[in-house]
Length: 282
Image (cartoon, rainbow, N blue to C red):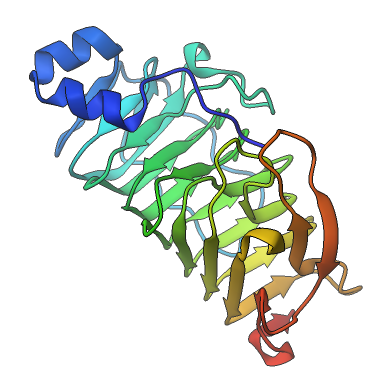
């Protein structure tokens, strides 16, 4: 399960914002994007993806190597630039000390961005934020991690992610995470409600118009003892002739870091909310 990364918490960033942008950059070492690109140097063009995808990735308009996490504190449209993580952010494996390419604060949003390989720890999204048409050419540790208190509203709309060993989206905060019109391929779990975070919440997860292609193990993992729910609508699973992908896995979560135990799977009307007609196999 994901653990807190080595940079300032939300309160710390907000405090620094009050003393001005220059002081923020000096104190955090973050590059800021707020309506315009502000990352590092251009890189040589990377080869196109070799794998055919259910969703076509956009053609990058430019390519930038990122050496420091980019802070986004207002709406930012990347114009389909590919941001390639530098080695300072991590190796793109399952090491939980990796840093994100983007950190999106409350009130910020990220759109039309391509995250290149290695995916490191993708995007960190704090409080209520929106990711629109974000494309991960490599999932890395997690494509995106969501953190915030009760009542947070997180949205992923459009985009795609491929090539990961574990989770695509990690829901560590409270509130609702909605994933809409999204495509994923080659992963273990599409969305996981944190099973062993030190602070736990009741979480809701909604998948609507999502298409996944095997290899994949499960769509959603939730903690029934914390009252989590998962709602699935208009989901398509490609290549799963044996019906091996679990739509909704229930766990008994904890707050002491232990690996959670499985407690059941599939629709139950309370925690896992969907019917057979909500899932199409192709």
